[in-house]
Image 1 (cartoon, rainbow, N blue to C red):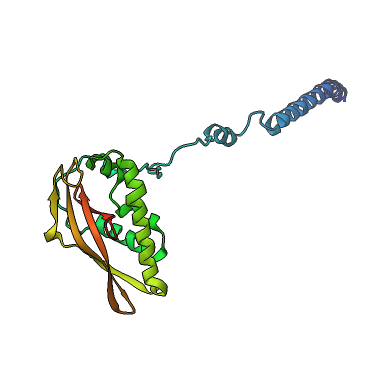
Image 2: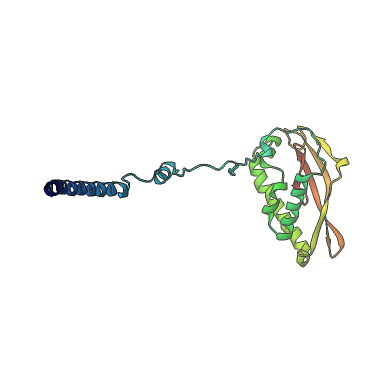
Length: 231
């Protein structure tokens, strides 16, 4: 019996001693668990990798010129009269001749001499050709003035048929053309000259024509110098 009492006393002492240690250990474990929870659930302090990547890979648009973009071309037209004469004989064919004939026809139909100026002998060429005191004055006051008067007269001949008239072409007797040399007709230059051309058209299916008195050449092209009679 005495032995049992002694054993009970020892166990009681041990229980009292271990109680605080167990309690302390439990509190430490709780703090450790709480600390661990804070660490593992705290949000990251750095930006997500995807966001950083997007920021660094963004491109700033720059102004560029499109490859093959159209550019503005500058066309320079050379006055043929500023170029030297050639002895090439005109053929009364080709795109330029046809365009000139059409310009004359439109001038007659519309009663507007300015439309026919491309088909008239260039003033700059006239200055090279003529050996007279005032070729520029003669060109404007006589040749161009007469040209305008002749166009007005032909328009008047058309009358109310102007709206129905249709151009069919221009006949030029090329086989009758002559090469005019310096010293003839107050010239210091040369050119081909032909008389007796006609501007052909129809009105309501009937063929008609206007006479074109004189054509002279410059660099292989025919130009009008006298539409009506020479004066």
